[in-house]
Structures are given as structure tokens and as C-alpha cells.
Image 1 (spheres, rainbow, N blue to C red):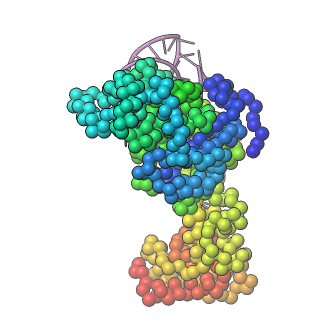
Image 2: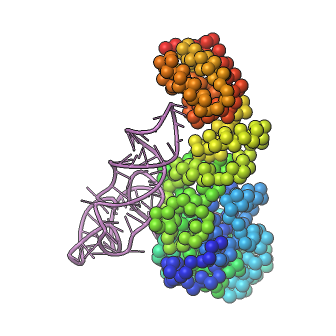
Image 3: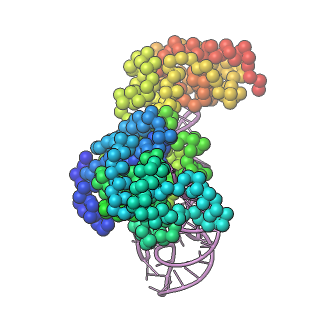
Length: 492
RNA sequence: GCCCCCAUCGUCUAGUGGCCCAGGACGCUACCCUUUCAAGGUAGAGAUCGCGGGUUCGAAUCCCGCUGGGGGUACCA
């Protein structure tokens, strides 16, 4: 890592400075789905922030929802994080293995009179909710069980009566000072005594998060704005727990191009999907970093090290952003061009390419890589060196599969067959001479050949490609394609 | 319904009272290069800074209202 920059950076002042000595942040996904790019961006910002301040990045799995959590999704998330290069310093911790902590904290809160048992059944609550709705009012738990004496509460619990544990919400306005979203006030009459622990003993999200953040000494909570309305609850809980709340930074949502929540409908939403589509982790990271954060000074493409040294919470914007696949594709194309060839070969994961002579493969990559934006595209482009094209572009067939094209193909093939040594410069000379003699444009000769060789009208410079393909393969494809046309020529 | 957040080119954004009749990037258009497609080069279109009121000598930047969008409102996370 580069040496830290001096304290002229804006984030070295003010509110964050107090906790800046030992930054501890966490990414806390819930294993109810694969890693969404929104989650990946949250993880990235936490990671960048930790690295920027030589802090600690903790990974914590929030699997208290037994019904929806799935073990295999955890490993999938970990794998995606690793692929992105977001290494964690502690964890993964599993909340499902930390129930003793929650139990202990809950008992303590009850003992201190900051939380209490509530014995209403789900049905009773549901009925109350219905009633409130009918009256057009927002439902808030009545707080009826606040009035229970400790003795009665203990007695009913001991008798086996079901209960949840609720936090005794203080009757005061809670102010959340968010580094990204600014100041937000929450009036006590929209906050009720929310549930900490379910009747089956499972801690609820708000509770386990705060207990863990407190226990793990989390200094900064960086997460999506969807959690902003939860934050006053967390602040109250931290106070009840006797802990200073961390600094909050809530990130705007990542939306699809239509402004709706990003999902598979928009092409892809999971990190794993982007990986499969042939995107490079550094490109995805760079792109995601810029979705909501800007280093200023018109910087766009950056290495991870540069992002780390430039990153700060105050340069994160509050507004939601749309996921622009086009820009990602551009960035990926840029990264693809810069990847060293041995690494690229490993990334391509195409063992069949080893059938090609090293020199051929090297030359082919040199020819095709500049024309591709993803690994998948490059892999497909390279396949023409392994087997003859199986399909031909319909538009190409319409334009360049007429009877005279077959004739041109045969003439060109004949001319090329005598070239020795078989170099692209020699071929080009010969082809130009041929064009001159016949009064044809070079393109009239080249396009049918291109179609014959690749099945497509778009390719690297024809003769360079032929040189890599080899005389035998090239002539075979040209002649066979000529035959195919003659059997079934496209009318004018 | 109630609560909270957001609002600069199509998109990501720079911009924190005068340097901005708004800068960069992706995308788009044209031209150059050229055997095709990319890449590259050059030029260009594209935002009355959501709307309306203030404050100020002066506002994209501060305040209020409206509109639009998003989120939350669980014994989910």
C-alpha cells in the first residue's frame, strides 16, 4: 500500500476524526441471495475506507433468519468477495453462532429496565394493526406490557407463557447525523417499542446488529439508505447498551436503467453473473466505486491503490444512481487491453486453446483482443482458430454470397496459394494487384473471404488473420464456402 | 396513509455564493484513418442546473413550498 497522504484530506477533520485512529468497519450480508452489485458496492466502500485508514474490515454473516438463510449462499458470497479482491481482516463471524451474546444483552437490558417482555400473541397484534389501518392511522405497539411489574413478568415467563422482548423507547426526538445524507430527525411518535427477540428466542436484525457492532467495536457503519429509517432505532439501542453510536454513512440505492430497483430483469444484478459474462473484477470494482463516489479532479479509471488513497466518505454523493451497462462494458474493454497475456490466458479458462501453437495463440490474441470488451467475446472470437465457422451472418450471405462472389473467392484463393513466404504483406500485395487487374475493389475480394473464414463481416485485417490461420485452413474455408455458394447462390 | 431520503447533459458525475450562459467520462453524430469491424485522431450535438417563490449587489450552490423519484413502516434482513 502507498504511504498515507497527509492530513489535508477533508475526511481527516471534523466528525470522523475522533474515531479515526482505529477504524473498524464491517460488511454484513445476509445469506438469503447471492451477492448483489449493490451489496458489492457497500462492501467495496467499507473495504476502501478501512484500507485508506489502515483500519480493520470485518465480515459478518447475518443469518438469524433461519427460514431464509442458506449455507451455500454464504460460500457463494465469500467467493464473490474474494473474486473482487475485497479481503477481510476478521471473520466471517456468524450471528447464528453468537446467540449467547444476544441472550446476555437482552437479559441485561431487562434487568436494567431498558427492555421488557411483551406477552401479546401475533394474532392480537395483527388485530390491533387491522384496527389502526381501518382508522387510517399508523400502527404502533401500544406499550401495554410496559406496565407489567417485574414480578408478574417473571411469573408469566416462568409459567411458560410466550413473549417477545421489546426495547423501551425513550420519548425523545432522535437525531441522526449521517456523513452522506446529512441530518435527519425522527420524532418519538413514529418510533415504538420494537421487538428485540422473537418468542422463539431468535434475536431480530436490529438487535443482533447493534449488539455485534458494539461488541466488535465498529466505528463507522457504511450501508444502503434503505437502512436510514432504521437508524434511530439503532441509535436508541446503542444508548441502551451503554455504547456510543458509530458514525453513519448511508449510500444511495443502485437502480436499473429504468429507475427501478436493479434486478436480473436489467440483464444482471449479481456479481457472479457479471463474472460469467466475462467481466474483469478490477473493471467492476472501478465502475462500482464511481457509482456514488467521485475522487474529483476528473478521474475515472483508477487502480485499486489509487482508489484507496483517494477514498473518503465526504466525497460520496447522497443521490441514487443508475447502473449503466454501457459504461461498465467500456471500462471492462479498457481493463481487458491492459491485462498481461499470461494472466489473460488464465482468465479465459479455455483449455481447448492449448491445442494451438503458442505463436498462433499469441498472434490471434493480438489481433482480436482490441476488438473485444469481455472475456466471453474474446473466447468466442478465438474459436475461429480452432474450428471452421458453423454459422454465417445472414446479412453477409445476402451481400456476399452471390455467384460472382464464389468466382472472386476462387480467384483470390488461387492467387494466395502461390504466395511464398506466406506473409500478410505478400498477400496484400498480391490481392491489390489482383484487384487492379480485374478492376475490382479490394473490398469485393476481401468481404466474401472474411465471411468464408469467420462467418462474419467483422474481423481483424484480412491478410493478417489469414497469416495466423495458416494457408491450408484459409484456402480450405474459402474453397468450401465458394462451393457452398455455387450450390445455392443468393440472387441479386 | 404516515415517516425518512433524494433531485446538474440520455447515464455516471465535477461544482459548497461571483472563476459556470456549467467541466469531465460513457453513450451518440460527423469527419479522418481504412479491405470489414474495432481502436485511435479531430470536430460536434446534448443540462434555461425538476418547478415556483424568497435571501443576496450576485445562486446550480442558502431558505421555504410544490412536483417527481426512491426507501421505510414485521416476532425479514
